[in-house]
Length: 204
Image 1 (cartoon, rainbow, N blue to C red):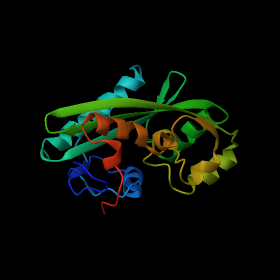
Image 2 (spheres, rainbow, N blue to C red):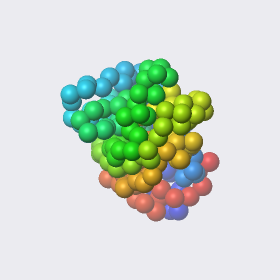
Image 3 (tube, helix red, strand yellow):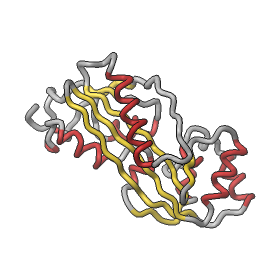
Image 4 (cartoon, one colour):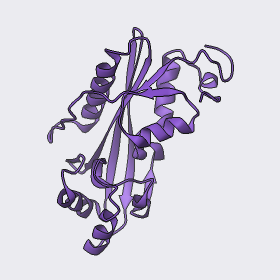
């Protein structure tokens, strides 16, 4: 696996149905297939959110790796945490409104677990970013929800879409808030024996 843009870069599978994670990897010029995992994303309200994110990412990677054993499998799971409260994906528009009302004017954590499986190797890591929201009125929240980008997102917002106007500041990895911390993934791949210089290049 040597040489810039090497064709020996392993066959990769993204174990996620998230178009945002897919877009981030496409932006790197990587060739990969998408195989959504068969894993129920159950969140325990009183569990450690960091370990829950790691556990779910590992479960997703294992689920897909079972049928893709010759490929490098990448999986991730993102959780939004406000104080001691875990905010998953909203069940309906009213739930999304509730989450955004809670996040208004406050700082929350976005935690993503990333897991990689390749051959007999497996590794995982956790990334955490602090996000501060602007103060929002009910009317502003309703206007944001009219854009229909809240449904499948932890915390009911998308920082790369209309949600960018909700965010006053972030501290940490921006890509983590999108759903896949690329630096963390890169370090995991290095640990798998894929050096940084082999992670660059056109592979599309």
